[in-house]
Length: 259
Image (cartoon, rainbow, N blue to C red; front, side, top):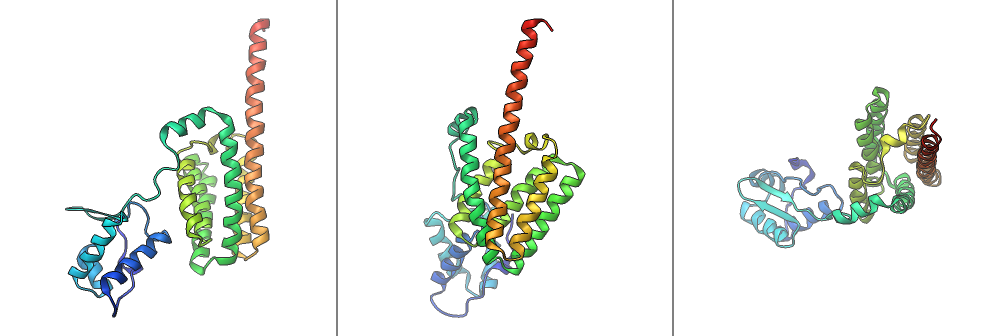
């Protein structure tokens, strides 16, 4: 994805190359610029920053040397892969085969989602609020269409926007890796969760409450809404897994008895 020049600030004086480096680093720290984002062309960026192209090249070269940018000749300049995978593929597959890891994942998310919602209620800007409302509406529309794939993506995107509204750079970067696992369905099979009676409706109500408490600036209520949401997810999965196990046993009994 190419990035608009509007996120960059004009530079009027000072050590130009150093200021350019600092500005782009700040955008990466705050995840305004994300892994894989393509920067504007050299000409566009130089004009926006009000610097010469040689000074811009010096800054981009420094950022490349620091491992923050990848300059691909003929393609452009991109933000490098920085966070990496939360886990290596072999470890992901191992965890996927062992149920305990799934509940460890939920336990971790419960704590982080609660913190993110609390901070978002305290720190969300007007733009953050618009984004949260927009992503909640997208989730509502996907649920109304009963589009499971769109609902899963909208669910993750909604939580990501809450986390971004926390304005805690470390939390945002760490949760980005967790959300990537969630999108791939490594631990959190939302489609399975929604097959339980009333779960889809309940999940949507919970997301609405998280949004409401964050948007109204209620830190305690927002943290409570987020943690109770994750508690519901864990409880529902435990019930669902027990039902599957019980049905498997019942079928085996029926097969043995010839019924």
